[in-house]
Every structure is written in structure tokens, then in C-alpha cells.
Amino acid sequence: MKRSLKDLANRRVHFIGVGGAGMSGLARIMASEGIHVSGSDIKESSVLTALQTIGVEIKVGHDFANVVGADFVVYSSAIDSENSELVAARAQQIPQLTRAEALAILMSESKSVAVAGTHGKTTTTSMLTVAIQSCGEDPSFAIGGILKASGSNAHKGTGEFFIAEADESDGSFVEYHPFGAIVTNIEHDHVDFFKTPESVILAFEDFVGTISPDGFLVYCADDKGAKALGENVTRCKTISYGVDPSADLHVDQIDLIPAGSRARVLWRGRSIGHLELQTPGHHNLLNAAAALAAGLALGLPAAQLIGGLSTFRGTGRRFELRGQVHGIRVIDDYGHHPTEIDVTLTAANRYATDGRVLVIFQPHRYSRTRAFAKEFAHALEKADQTWVLEVYGSSEKQIPGVSGQSITKLMKNGIYEPNFMAVVASVVAEANPGDVILTLGAGDVSSLGPIIIEALTARFNN
Image 1 (cartoon, rainbow, N blue to C red):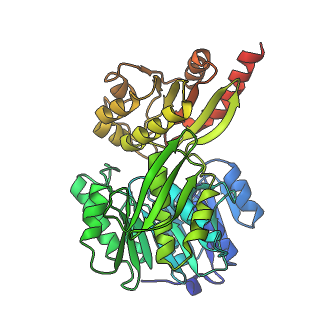
Image 2: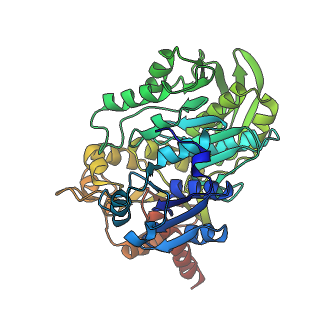
């Protein structure tokens, strides 16, 4: 049954796992719509505190009593099917919405753009949001990370556009039915859900099949999977971007500098300006090109879009500078797939200039570690030294024989160290002025950033 915002008016919507990056954003937007929102999570966090300040009822811990009186319950794929609140919702016949279904309802009354791809979704969604804002628009947005410009991951705007990150991990992005879409790349990941590379491709084919016939698909001509997908789309207008000279939006005269990049942009053979980015890496140049192409497809002016992209200062946990002590910079990044790690370390080596890159990597999910151990090892060899923590299992059960050591035994410069404090002590003792320390992974490895900074300060102040 397809629902609309009217169905949620004067109703109470309860979020299970409301502290998650995606769920908290939806709760924030629904609260902005005047909907009665409640939510629960397993532990307290700054995210829950922020939601409370805008009127969301928060419960710490999962309990069947939390859903009593709710009219709808929203849950994500990270929630176990036997979660007490989900079980209670089924027993009480309370309508249940997946996170994707809830986001689709919020998007349904706007001209929406869904940003998909195996890598780069969060940054590209953030870039497009900032670029559109620079055109004097106030778009709604829902992003899987914190947009530094606003300090938030979601916003209910007053304009006609809704920009949403479209997560493919469980195939649910087919719910969105956007006006337009971006596909940055297609690669095998989320191996717990997608058993084969072909199943990932089929999911993306289903996704682009939901785009409005009056809308558009922006795809990367430099990526084999995205290009094959885009070239076969007849449902709507297509726009390609990339270094490939045949791309509709072509970037050339590329200059990659330690803390950013520059490039000329040609729109169907005609120069429309130069991108000047504050985010490093060739991959971020492509992300910006995707955002620019989508902005042009929406009919917005090139000069203002390019100007907005030049002001983009990044997204939380995407090559985020956490601090600097005695010339040692501490960076945090969400990269958790071998391809993401490869491009991140390429950027990190350029950023470090003459210094070394010291990595603390936390593998995310046992299934991904088992499937890509060799690829992880190869990508991490780009660092001067890597400490690998134990696998962050998320909601996944441990697979016998799979651990962080599955990766380090294939490396020349890898050290397996499951103890967080031992890792901090080792990397702080090893670091010298000019080095870059990079905490890397999708789990809780990011919590080490402030601890490393404190330990570095103590070392150099003694």
C-alpha cells in the first residue's frame, strides 16, 4: 500500500534505532513536518540528545512498551527481525515501514534526486545539496553523514527539490521513484545480501527503472558498471560525466593538489568554468562532476553550481581532519571497501607530501572481510604502516576463522592488534612531525581520533 505524508498527519511514528545516521535524519524531517515522532536506541548519544531538543521522544534501550500507542513503526535493515519492539509492532498489528519506505514518503511531494552508487554516495549527495543551496534554493536533504556546512544530516527545506542518498545495501532503493538519479559506480559489495556481482547490477537496473520518464539519470562514464547501465537506459534522459572525452560533462586539465583539486569543465564540448575543490582526491573531483551534471539537469545555472562546489568543506567521516599536534595530522575516514581504501590512501599519500601515512583500519562485517581479504591487503599496502583491528561485526554473526588477521597475514606492513589502547600507544609512539594518522572503517574506529590527539599532545608536551 503506497502511503503519503497525509497518512502520517496527526499520527505517532516510532523509529527503532533512531540514532543511526539514516534513521535520525528521517526522524528530524518528520518532526519538522509536525508529525509526532518517538524513537529508541540501545545507548545514549549526541544524536539522541539533538533529536530530543527538537521534540522527538527518546527512549534508551529497546522495550516492547516503547511502541505502545504508536500508529507506525519505522525500522532499518540493521534491526534484527526478533527485536522486541518489532515483535511487539507485529503482535499489535501496527503498520511497519522500512527506512526506505519512510524516506520515499518524505520524497514523494518534491522533485527528488536520489544519489546511488557503491562508493561516493554521501559526498556526492552533500556536494549536490551545497551546490543547489548556492543557487538560492532551499532543498530538503537526507544524507548518511553530517554535512559540515549545516552540521546536520537532514533538513526539511522550503524549495521544490529533495536530495536523498540512496542506499543499495539491501535493494530497498527501488522504493524511492525519484524524478532524477545519480549512479556514481557499481561494484560488488554488501556480500551478505548480494551473493554475486550480477545481483548488484540487477538491483541497479531495477533502481533506474523507477526514475520518472520526465526525469534524468546521471552516470559516470569512467566506471565500467555505471557506463554499461547508463548506456542501456531508454526510460528517461541520460547524462554522462567523467574524464572520458565522450562524456556529456567532461573534466580535463586536472591538477590534483595535497588538499584539493582543480579541473576545467566542458559541457558537451563547451567550457563552462573551472572546478576548485577543497576536498582532495581524483574521486572527489568525479563526485563534484556528478553533482554539477545533476544540477544542470535540474535547470540550475552552471556558474552558481560551480561556485557552490568550491565552498564545499566536506562531510563528517569523509577524509575529515580531526586535529593536528606537532605537525602530525589525524584524519578520520569511513572507507570500508577495498576500492574506497585504495582511493583514500592515494589521496592521503598526496596530502602527507613528504610525511608517512599511518593507518588504523577496522574491517566492517565478517562477510566482507572474508570475501575481500586479499583486496583489503593490497589496498592497505599503500600506507607506510597499517594496524588492523578486529572485525566490527555490526548486526552480523561471527564467521569462524575470519578476523582482522585474515588481512594482515597477506600483508608485508600489516600488524594485527585487536586492542584499541594498544593500537593508540603504538601509532602515537611511531608518528613523527609531518606524518598523517588515518583512522579508517565504518565501525567505531572513529572514536580513536580524540584519544590519539590527546596522547600525541601528552607525548610532545612532556
